[in-house]
Length: 156
Image 1 (cartoon, rainbow, N blue to C red):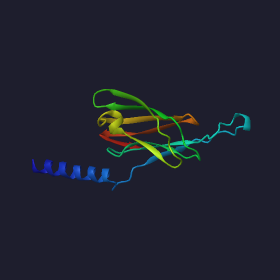
Image 2 (cartoon, one colour; image 1 turned 60 degrees about the horizontal axis):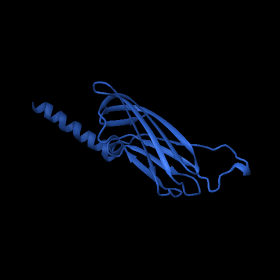
Image 3 (cartoon, rainbow, N blue to C red; image 1 turned 30 degrees about the vertical axis):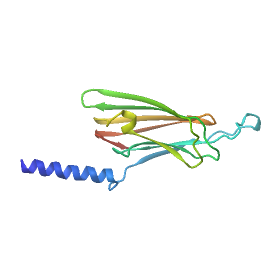
Image 4 (cartoon, rainbow, N blue to C red; image 1 turned 90 degrees about the vertical axis):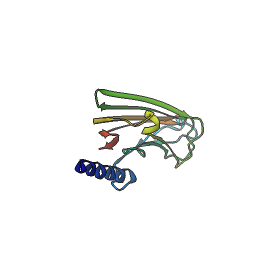
């Protein structure tokens, strides 16, 4: 009995260390490069978005960052998370729009906790697809593969 309690305590200490940042998580960072446009079809004040997907528990989620020179307006996202739950496969979809502009160099963060309305619980592969768009930016889609172990999402 004492041995299992000791193992449980050691496991919790390790998990807390992981969540506190003692063990770094991999992040996926993709930037879309827009094709050259002619002056007649260039949008005025066009900007660029990028998506960063993070693994983890409480700090896991994704960022939508404005990497352009102009404010991004009406920034929205669609997300699809598919993973193996404890008893069945689970797919969760979500979306959102921000009415406030996203300034150059700034980002919006969406955590897994707020998106999934709790912690994901599973054991096995996880696929995360995030698409971000704005009124004055081309849509960007990023797909990340990883592993979910209980509540922790590890990104490859």
